[in-house]
Length: 334
Image (cartoon, helix red, strand yellow):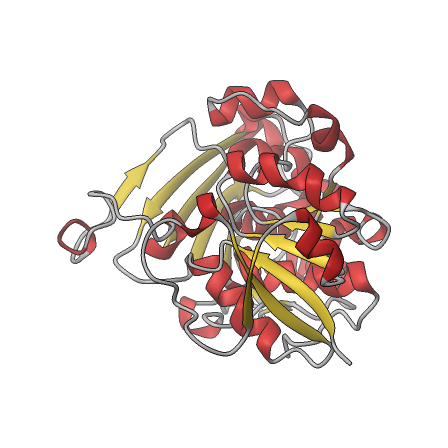
């Protein structure tokens, strides 16, 4: 028998992607949970397949759901998480509600009050490549944001190795497909605004910045991050610029990555001189990383690519679910 796992928010892009991933999982049965606040809006993308039942904590308990994934706005996640935990289910939250660790950081960057400070302090950050040890025993897992996933996988090994001249600053130029903004219709993400266009947004105040800082170990003044909207449905490409320290060649930087990620199933390092593009990662759970380096000037460029709905959301949630429930980490993803 398969383990039942609930999904609230299955009408959105990330929730629908997660339902599709778990539908092919060898050990998990996805169960779509109808919830009034998560269920308002367009008809669900998932129209058949997984069974669908009304949400309540009693239903979660009686259905024996081992975990519930919340693909909901942050405020809804805060409202639901406590009751789900009390019903005996582990919670994997795909919103930003529990990612930052402190109420102060959350309220500064999200511009709204946090109503569950105890759970915020308890939540395990779900970037497996750096936080794997905490995930299996955690009741509540905060699935990382899409931009921070690519940025931290690219930056953290280099920061740890002391390979960046931090006082010279780091520039992260990040571009995402329009599905990263969610399924609720807005003028900015309408077809006529996105098609044939490229636009920057949330300049100097993007809510994913503190996530990057928290995991990479950088200070706010050392990182300049700008998000831009691509006229595509999915995918993230981040081009990261910095001055390298104690580095003789691109291979030195690649050696840092290869040593750090040798045992990681979802991080792929490109050979010297090659960098990834979006086609390599769309509809996968991979993060692909490539490097270019100019020895005379010390200039380095790292390119990291992920699928914002895969490794940036639903794929990573499934990876965390596998760790939380004791399954092989790659189950349903490879």
